[in-house]
Length: 189
Length: 189
DNA sequence: ATGAGACTAGCACGACTGTGCTATAAAAGG
DNA sequence: CCTTTTATAGCACAGTCGTGCTAGTCTCAT
Image (cartoon, rainbow over all chains, first blue to last red; front, top):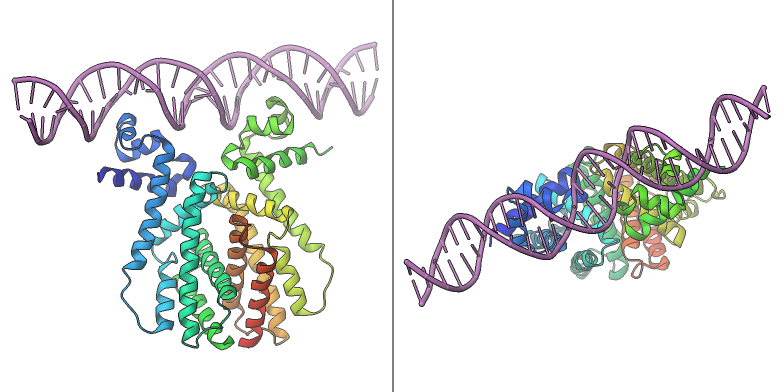
């Protein structure tokens, strides 16, 4: 059963190193140290493999968020959750790279689109929850939908930028951007 | 005369409809109504074709920005420029879809990366220019680098979101997000 | 020990890939 | 008129692609 996870690891390595289009059945098998036939015993088709890999990425991000230690202060909690979603270390940088590749393919692949939308909706709901709490504490405006649009876009924009150009966007500059946005929300109230 | 432009149109149609990975030499030739050999008379290799197509997209966006009618009021000018970059109509939606596809491939293709970085830098410089003007007019904080990071991320985030889910992000909601951000900048000053 | 199922391996097929190459048709310049 | 470019077309080659298929090997309960 855990062998499927090994295969997914191979997929993610391949996607990061050579791009999603290089994640062919043959390449994945070689990267995972399996024969083609053996790989197909775990995944009947390529699309099943890709869906599973995409789902794994989503699950990991959600698991990391769920394992955050509780933080009563709304402002600090907001900061912590948002920063957890940005590519501040190699692990999360890898996740974001893979996410970007899948997202791009989802533009033309209906099966992946459903998963992408699921991730999108979850992230947006998270942003909304953060803003609802902040607003209740008087730390953000009351127009939740509008601020959700803005925060969600800022978050994904920062993530994409940091993934594309890790050299320019340091952990510090990302932290500063988030902090500044939260400050702004408090002032606008 | 410029048959090359017709070929690029075919590439862009193909990328939008079926994804970048479907933009093979054969498919592009068929889409453009040419034979393979004929296409190769205009573009010696596939990568030359892709680079040219990517460059065309960049040039078009810059041309559209350059053709904006002058607007003396800093706030209105900022709004106009930023909205021009968002996928508010089909033409710009198409550009953003293609941009996203190229951007994703640029993660693993050094040749495309140079072009992507060029676009990235130009957009960031534009954001910085807008903020410098706003700041001079007392309509934005003086910490230009930090605000550039935020505005640039917001802009790209909105663009990506609207491109992925055009059904959810209406022209109105995008306009509102930009307007709200500019309001916030003025308040934070 | 024997049969069942899980696992591993690899070949074959038809389709698609980018590019090298040659051959023909049209246009242009002398 | 002839020649030189320019343009169009298409075949051949050596790959890679996903998947169907068969067969051998392992583990384990009966």
